[in-house]
Amino acid sequence: MVSFESLKSQYERNWADLQIRPARLGDANAIARKAINGKATYQQVERLTGVPWYFVALCHYRESNFDFDTYLGNGETLKRVTCLVPKGRGPFASFVDGAVDALRIQNFVGTQDWCIARTLYRLECFNGLGYHAKGVNSPYLYGGSTLYGPTEAKAGKFVADHVFDPNHVDSQLGTAVILHAMMSQDSSITLDDSPSIAPRSEPDEDVASSVLLMQQTLNKLGANPPLDEDGISGPKTKTAVSQFQQQNGLQDTGLLDGTTIAAITRAGAQPARTPNVDLSQILKRLEDLTQVMQPAAAAPGGGASAGQPVELSQILSRLENLAQLIQSGGTTPTTPIATPPAGTTPGVQPAQLSQILNQLQSLAQALQPGATAPVVTTPAPNNPVSLLGQLLSLVTKTAPGTTTAANPAPTDQLKQMVDLVSALLTNKPVLGQVNGALGETIGKMLDGKKTALGIGGSLITALLSAVTASPNAGGLAGLLGTIATSVPGLSQFALPISLALTAWGVLGKMEKWAQGTAPPPMPTT
Image 1 (tube, rainbow, N blue to C red):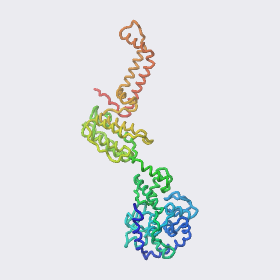
Image 2 (image 1 turned 180 degrees about the horizontal axis):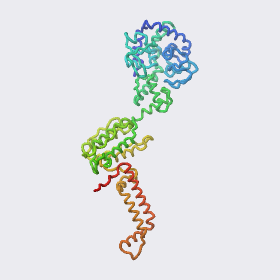
Image 3 (image 1 turned 120 degrees about the horizontal axis):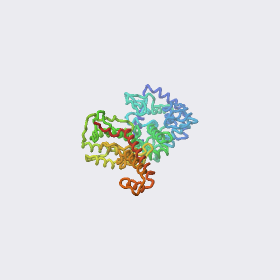
């Protein structure tokens, strides 16, 4: 943290060494006369705030070149609400009203120590302390003197927000230079360098620890660019506060008021979260991969056949793409899925099973809230059953406890991902929403049989309903008659069930055709 005490000796040394460049002396004296001409107005501000009138004049010069129709805090017009930081101030009836507001925001009201070091420190804080990190005397203070710019000193200027040009020389005169010229023309300006009788903290120092804590928290929350943790609410800190307020629905002022401090504190206390990942994107990519790996989706030419082993290197490649997708926030598609070359019969590579599990574990870790480092995994057994078992345990650990509107059912989506990977490893079709309507177990048991069972059940039910029981009938007719009469109203509930099963089977076939997972036609001779 940059403190006044750490910079005090430097300010005192620079003031003692300050010399106005001869070429700029006339400009400095002219600007000093303008400042002194507004002394009466500045003294009104001094009576209301305790801030010396010459300090107000120097800030006014740098912000708006002595324009009394502007706001002291940022140079905007007094007639409208300010749009620059500090935002939302005004409109003000007079320059004095606006100046009092600006000085109160800077916590200068009620300050008593106005020695030269304090004065220069507060003037620089008004503009920002960024030049100390660049090893350059601030042109806001020393522009036009031998303490800034070649050949006696280093040049440099922030030519835009957070953009420093080491070769640029600020042509505007610094406030310390103007103060030096004002003192040569007005003997009433005296700088009290004697120590205070009773040491006390200044109002701007009282808030430094709070500002420092907010800067640290904003940096933790990802302030861009990162803030200098100096306890000074300079322009860069105000801009970061403004961005936080906009992102969190607070009044955009750029100021650390009580509401904003509480909101930043709450946000900083929450565990860090990884970017929201749209699992539907990942699920879609796995679905595409599943269709590619199905026998029916092989390249033209019939290179794949039922029961053909899966090329695990392609699965591993796709999972690596998914890892990139997660790191990019789930919004940028990666490389397209490649179709296995026609006429090839890839072999299973057992060593790749453990690589796939490790990749899946990394994906699961990335999806966990608050994850900060990848999981160090151990080699997995080289068989699909063990792979899927460990993946199921990862889903249990990864599934968040709550859901959001943008991601309504992450747990269900992760389970679907497990099913899809299972299909990839076993080369079996994945049950869709129709075929899997009654669950995975029943769906697989009836897979490919529903239409036949439904049609057969409908025919048998119709046949049984037409049989009349006869006590003298024997053989098959007697057996059918006994069954038909033992269950009253058999056709009233059995026939609708059979017809529904038939319809389910037809819809299931249509779903398979739409997914591209329908079995290939039987070869004919």
